[in-house]
Image (cartoon, rainbow, N blue to C red; front, side):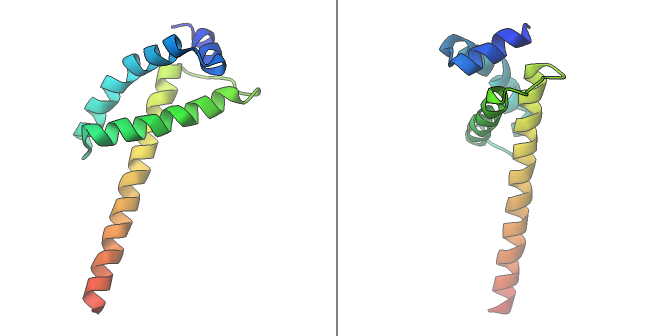
Length: 102
């Protein structure tokens, strides 16, 4: 995989490149998220957020990729899902406390 081709494609808004990145990474992410308490819909939402984060990184002129772009995409998306789970867990604890008080 030519990293620069994909980064340049992101920077120029090349729809073919973006579609290819989705096709390469989204199915793997869906499988991973379903194994980690998520749904296909969750995977699509989180993956979109992750791709936006990757795009922002690629537009930074100082951006230098140290691994594969696919690895970066998956890492960002996985971290976003883990953050989402932590947030939900915290919300459930707060709700339980509120019901105990009432």
